Length: 568
Image (cartoon, rainbow, N blue to C red; front, side):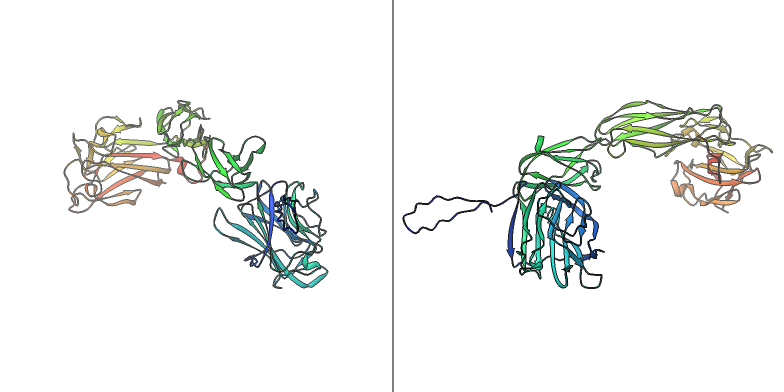
């Protein structure tokens, strides 16, 4: 204890009460001893056994000690817990000392032995309480001094999120080794320059004793740093409590959690992370207490409407596709870059405010590319976005060896909303392509729902039994079919099957039942051609009307063939 004084007037026998101030170390740890409390025990046994060994453990939550926060600890058989590294020395010392270990707890530092597994001896850990008032307990159970291994005793250290440290003892006492005559009890900082030594080689450790250390000049600020967009933790954020020379900082864990042990009083809290908007707060840090501070940081969240862009483009042609970018997060600038001579993105940069939208035009040019080529490139969209500062959108262009697109039922060429060309319908001739069988044209002037290509879906071929495509290179093809009922045909009035290359792909198609009337219905299938001919057959159900189709496109897909080659 530190000395104390009191004033008294003496005119005879006089009783004077002198209040001694609480002893603290430089940092402000104070100590109190009591008896009669139960020793906390562990429920998970470590592999730690023998003499002069340590085991590293990942702490279940960050633990503060002398203004620093730790995520790992090295627990030793010799009654020590070091947060600074392994220590196996069996000769104890007085505190503080720059000799190892440092940043350590010393519930009973002596030359001890932990029995083998199954002997009833061991080192156990446990977690108790709820955040932010959890405790991590380490229990040395039925251990002994190396010189008297039949004489067992137990002790534990419980470390709290609030910076408190409590030692408890069972089976100790007397004037010898079990009382602490050759042991060190205390806590120490990371540099070995400050410590609170409860005892050193002094037999004061009685059975049932509890020794508690608490902070008198500092408290703990704890919480999480969250992403305001998704509510999840931000790893690697910096939390600083205080300013100037008394500022203390910590880095957040993967879940965004942090613990900072800070001097008490009114303190500024700063929460920052790369690509996030910083947040500040003012809190009242109470000594030996926990102050929760959880904040959400705003950041951009640039997203693309499509995860990838694919363009099927015959040789020596050009197409344009649009990629929409949105940003529900904090407003941010963005930049777009591509690394392929056949791909150009416009604009190359811009600004996306909160809730904003930007359309990026992707121009693709297949000039000079050989039929059967598959090209890929990555479109990189850079922004100030905490989760995805670089958004990558793959772009693929496929140059088919063969493509035939028919606006069935039409006698003129069309261009669809994507800029792809469609040929007028035609009757089959050997060596070419077209429809077979007695058929007729259906048409309407009404609006067709579900499509941007009104002209193409207002005409249809009805009654054919097949479309045949001759002299197609063998390989993998997509077959795209478009349907629309162009009259008030009711369900169950037109039912037919569609077979591609002899395989039934659309059994019992009832357009009106599936989509309604005057509404576009599209389907796409992948098939393999091995005989140079691609057949799309329509089989009507007896008494259920005639088959009908509005658009039909067959396209060679070298990118989908087994072991297809790739180029960049």
